[in-house]
Length: 439
Ligand SMILES: *[C@@H]1O[C@H](CO)[C@@H](O)[C@H](O)[C@H]1NC(C)=O
Ligand SMILES: *[C@@H]1O[C@H](CO)[C@@H](O)[C@H](O)[C@H]1NC(C)=O
Ligand SMILES: *[C@@H]1O[C@H](CO)[C@@H](O)[C@H](O)[C@H]1NC(C)=O
Ligand SMILES: *[C@@H]1O[C@H](CO)[C@@H](O)[C@H](O)[C@H]1NC(C)=O
Image (cartoon, rainbow, N blue to C red; front, side, top):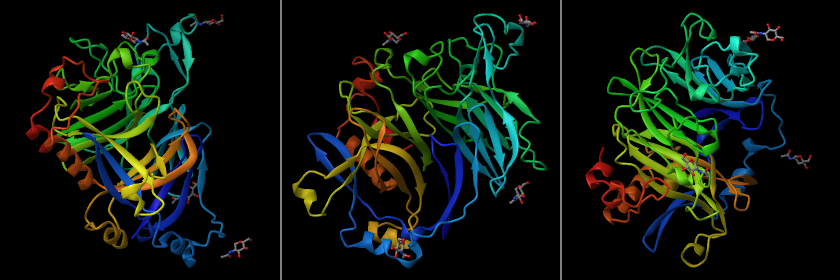
């Protein structure tokens, strides 16, 4: 089995087609767990190739590091934020542009998304040119905050940018010319921004950072959104930290199913407690988000958390969080005695996949088990900025679920202070065990 890897670096302008990796040569790490004074800390341990595996792997003939590969690559004119692979094309969301690349990474189409002239009196997608000379008008670069594929209703690419209140455009992908994403483009926004309850279901992404998961559920398409919400960028209080919304069948916008289809960081903590949403995925009726945030409201140190809720829970009653830690221990036996040597506290990227035979054996898993592969970095002191030190840690999804279940079973749940007030119904008696564990 081989996987193709497209490397996308947030600070670079390039998309590289990289070496084909043989799955079985993946690094082997084992998860383990400790329980300290009532709080579950979930630890992923990097077993340091104690049995000499790392050296072995390094010296394998097929891993000659001297070889320089001639690989196709593409360099965008503006920084790249997102990529989507669909059939034989790669759609690349960058500042002010969406590029369509063919399989050999040649740009075959460019759709311009910015800069956008914005004025407080112009609605998203409204032509604002007649207000160009007003002092309140500004030209803004459009960063791509989400690039999504939706194939349930029709093949379409959905792009959401940092302008226009976080609304999205849909680009129909025509089967006879899938590269031409400029032929059929519609704004996913209704003329009236706010609905009766003062919400803006069409305002999807935050200019400060977003992670969006699109899933077909019971003949509807749900959008699960994690947004970094900070005061300075908070547009009309219309953005939510975690939300579930449904794509309307008319495809021209979204709707919240209930008035409780979102959870927000409490306003007083928004500036001091930013949450970065790094990755989102679905497995077996659960939605997961991986975040980087401060360890607690009064901590300056950042760590990684995993969030889980049921995919059909439109009121987010089953919402839970748990820390996730990637650490390196020098020798396996030190686990019981000493401190971990190094902790890689902040997740940078993640991937869900199956193990190869050797990895499954090493981790005592079935080859059908799903594994979370996470690339973690050590942060700079009291910062969410990564340093140069990084590691890849793996953990089975079923192990993550076992720990969520243990937290519930042992009644070890604590109120999430950044989300709920002390007197919230969710803090006194948040959920029934059944709600959380089964979906
Ligand atoms: C790799 O390059 C170094 C320096 O040029 C050389 O010393 C070494 O023998 C090379 N290794 C292999 C496996 O070719
Ligand atoms: C991609 O486009 C380039 C330039 O048009 C062309 O030379 C190349 O053959 C195409 N590659 C594929 C896989 O279609
Ligand atoms: C804006 O100002 C320029 C120069 O003053 C003028 O040529 C242009 O017609 C004006 N545009 C509008 C829409 O008023
Ligand atoms: C953020 O906004 C909320 C509500 O608008 C306000 O209560 C809070 O004080 C603000 N925080 C900061 C740090 O400005």
